[in-house]
Image (cartoon, rainbow, N blue to C red; front, top):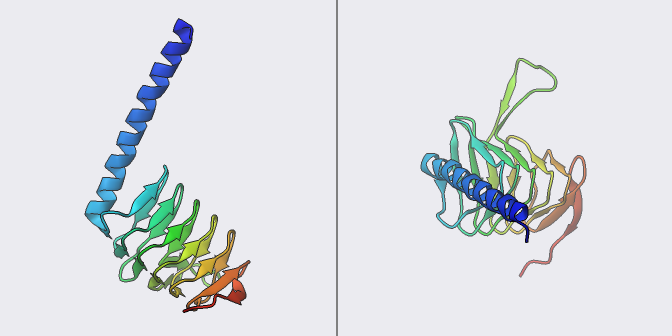
Length: 165
């Protein structure tokens, strides 16, 4: 390896360490602000948790890079245990009304246990996702999703029901 290649590698390694340290600092701030299980994983850069409402995230869950969760008071966002949330997912407890732009829609968002959410999913205010549900990639969740339901599309619709024990 040439001297130039070694220098580029060393600079890249230093940048990666600094970047990871910055993410760790940001994600530690989220843990201090919200009720997040110690073993919850932030999978990558660009994850944003914000708002003055309550946010609770259960054990052994994770969220993918570039995802956003808004917990706007007085609404709360609850994510259960063993949840897998893909990249670029948006979960909002508040949104502007499409019919009256001056009006804000607020509602609790509850995501049950063992829920799988694909990439590029939007979950709006006031939605409940039942335990063991699956939300397909690129879906927009505009109504509640039942226990064990597999949904997908825009708006998300029932594809089939998982057999539950």
